[in-house]
Image (cartoon, rainbow, N blue to C red; front, side, top):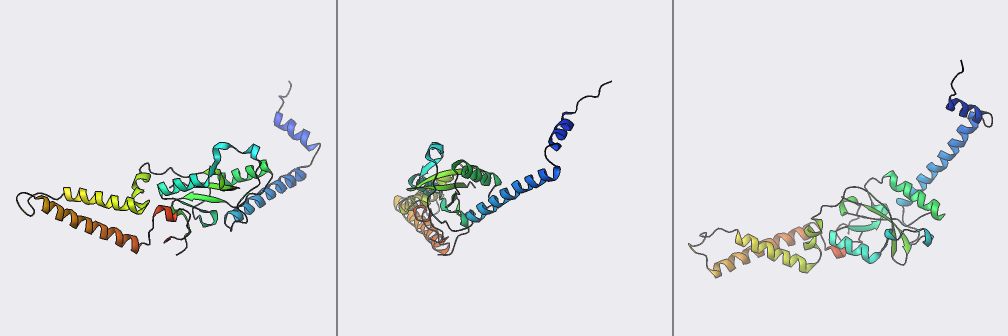
Length: 238
């Protein structure tokens, strides 16, 4: 006998008594337009030269686990052969979640964030001639605030695979080690029935010379450099 109450209809009726649908649509449209303008401004900032190297964050609102000094960033970049460059050089897609976190930070701290930097492998940057990104914003005094991390994690062996490229000493050691392994793989009897120490030494010297030549050729031909020289360089052959 009595019609059941439809809460959605009652809600609409209550709303329509106080504001028209056109007014609601216009209000929502204005909100979305303002949000789109924020997205465009942030995208433009990410793709432009940094105006300043600090941001006026409210220190009491920062999360300490997201604060890193430049020395921490440098060590990780050198160990894993990564680069720490301005976001304008980043050529990979920036997830919208990162933009959302930037907007939330700006709202929380009542500022417009500038000077974004990203940690990523060289292949993800548009490098000038001369895996796992992290987006940072500068706080000041060589401190940076981690805003967002995306993508896949790095190969667990990347640190060890990149050790030979860390510095000249590591490269020499790696070349010697590979030469020793290659010498050990040479079958006995290739020169005589029983290998003498002098023959083994000659083979090792030949292996070392050959492998070192390939390393030098590859390094010069590809314009490669050691990790501690490229971690903050915008040049692919720095």
